[in-house]
Length: 91
Image: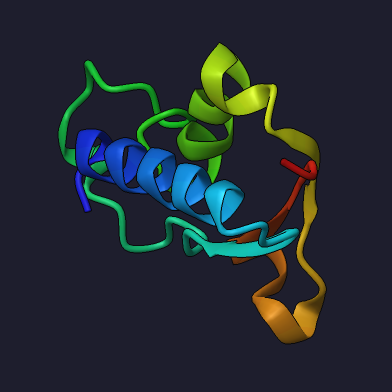
């Protein structure tokens, strides 16, 4: 995914899951090891990688954040550093 595609996809995923009363999501972004951000000196190393930018997008989106009770790092068996959990509030 590009950053815009990832943000749209995660927004749709959270909204749909919330509507279906899902309480825990696992989002796998990868660790960004194969990111092409090194090729563009005008792109921030930190925020061009989905691992950092997707959670940042979620936290800044007031529509999404009111549906979320917690965002935490994933356990190693669920992706470790390349994934995170989103715990949704009840509808």
